[in-house]
Length: 128
Image 1 (cartoon, rainbow, N blue to C red):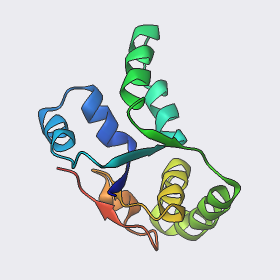
Image 2 (image 1 turned 180 degrees about the horizontal axis):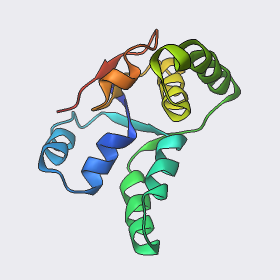
Image 3 (image 1 turned 90 degrees about the vertical axis):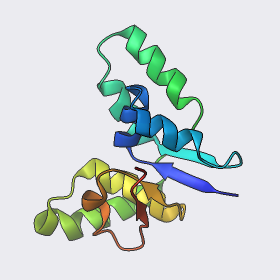
Image 4 (image 1 turned 180 degrees about the vertical axis):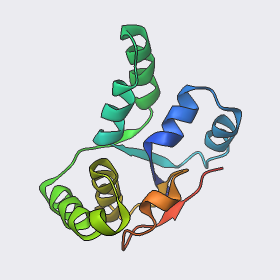
């Protein structure tokens, strides 16, 4: 089974109908299991301007397994934040998303590989 996790930026592109994003998702193997962090869902909702956009975003994310932040993941995110905030300026939300991918042993597809490449144990891939 092909399990994949996605960063927020990839879903934003899909929501906006970016052709290369749509092509990427259309070409994924049919048996793929698609995951996003609950942090990603909140970031997506925070970009909505009205209830209509929010409904569209909820419809978009309904095709994804939404992974909650467990105690283990929040502690891992804290550890990563302490280790890399001062040296690399990594953000809290990126640490939470990264720690979720790490603890679930999932590759993280993101256009912002630079944000995540410093996190040990995280496999990042650029989708397009």
